[in-house]
Amino acid sequence: MNADTRRTESRTAALAFEDIRKDYGTLAAVDNVSLLVPHGQFAALVGASGSGKSTLLKMVNRLIEPSGGRVLLNGANVLDGPAAAIRRRIGYAFQSIGLFPHMDVARNIGIGPKLAGAAPDDARIAELLELVELEPHHARRMPHELSGGQRQRVGLARALAAGPELLLLDEPFGALDPVTRDALGKRVRALHERLGLTTVLVTHDMAEALLLADRVLVMDSGRVVADENPAALLAGAGGDIAQALVAVPRAQADALEAMMHAPQGGAA
Ligand SMILES: Nc1ncnc2c1ncn2[C@@H]1O[C@H](COP(=O)(O)OP(=O)(O)OP(=O)(O)O)[C@@H](O)[C@H]1O
Image 1 (cartoon, rainbow, N blue to C red):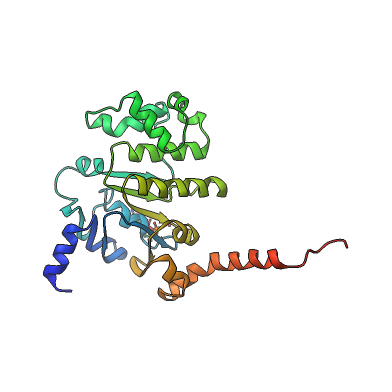
Image 2: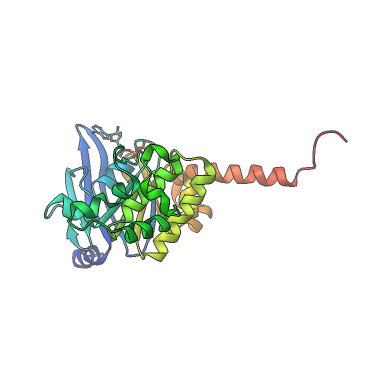
């Protein structure tokens, strides 16, 4: 691809990383990553702990300053202008949620738009609660009066409150039980479709990535070592590191399948 084509593609993508890097001393936490995420795509970033997933994500909403390269959001460098202006265009939900303990659910959800001078009214809060399948009466609860899964839903509603162009999710289901995690994952995918979002999800869990995403990016030592769709990964593409991650859910699925077809043991 020549430089002109590359520049045009970077400008028209929802999100573009151009030779982005982050160094901590001699460690390259993110090592010259270039990627385009088209509008409407649901991409998952998968990889071992410490492979650079969160660092890459946080350079989009300027929680981390890059050591080199650029991140473009709809063609504009995220470093141009105030960080708050960029963050208003990006929904961000993460595992530890960061709800304000002294504010009720409605105020927690509305904090971003309120800081921007447009506090959401009760109808908008009710609409956001409905999107994440919470009840209207949850609006007046305090964070400590909610379950972990409900708190994650509030975090998601807050991420959606300003009508973002881009949704960044950093292990948003990490601390949840498997049933809640599965339900919330499906809800996020449905919202992605319904709201026409572009979404990047960081997860340790390859099964989650395969089930939810259109595209799976595998990171290792700060680099993207595989970039495949779920069907291709399941068919064996992506190289050794990606296949080692795919092997885990595959082995579990095979073991369950074998159990279902095994003759019943126990007393005859
Ligand atoms: N502030 C920091 N100072 C020094 N090193 C850091 C800092 N933040 C992250 N790192 C290092 O950068 C590397 C990438 O970290 P990062 O959090 O991006 O990984 P990750 O893939 O998101 O991991 P996890 O899945 O465990 O959250 C790791 O080796 C980490 O120790």
